[in-house]
Image (tube, rainbow, N blue to C red; front, side, top):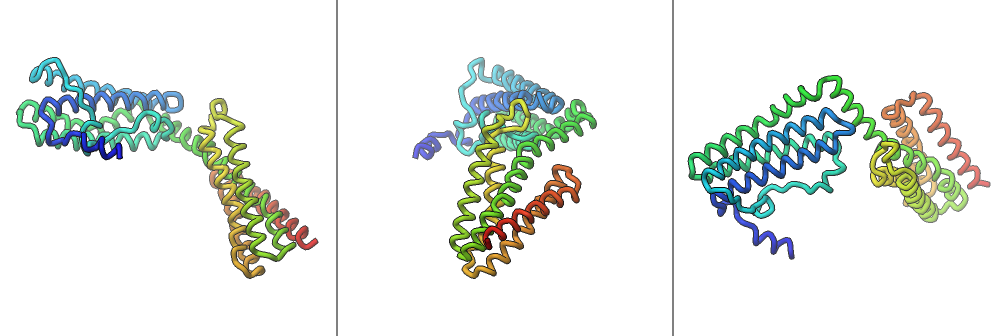
Length: 327
């Protein structure tokens, strides 16, 4: 309700005067410069070369702002009206700082490209509705300049991110992805897949009741997921270890733990015991080999060692569960 009311009180772009269009352009350039500087601050510690690129891009935005202010001063005087993006209906918006704080390097680069594309559309539209020849020329020139920003960003990247630095930054981003998502997710998948084998199959062979087995598997999987998630999030805030957000790691670990157990619990929704057990056994086989593949692919564990550790270990746990259930 409040959102609709606020939208109705926004200005139509077509209703803006030439002075207000200039004021909007000035505010937009200032906001984009601040965003680029915020990106530079965010990236400086891990990606110093990319941080320098964004500092230079912010300087370009400052240059555009100064040109616009000079035009406003010549045409309308010193007082610049207060009008911003969020005052204009349908105008593109920028995310606040707290929603950009945890973006990856690739997400930041993609967001910067979108910012430039939006700025191009704004200047083209602004030039098309402006009657003053000098203002129209300036806005058209700025549209062309924004179109060249991708080339500028590329040139700045070549200047501040030479090949060795680019490789180093890409490797840093890959390592961060592994530490934040792959490592805790893999640990959760291993724990959920292996640790729930014994209770699920023990319950299955002890009761031969598929519904009761499913309930035991569901409770074991969800409980293990919650436990692993909280443990991962609580034991390391990531500041010293560099492993990233504890919330992201906790979610990765907890969700994968639960999925690892549910994989071989869900087949017991099938009423026929031996059919459900056969499908569950196939799922276990796939899970264990998938874990071995992930270890080899992302953690660079030799494949035979991964197979020995995971498949053999999981098979022993599975056999223990079956023996206990038949005991």
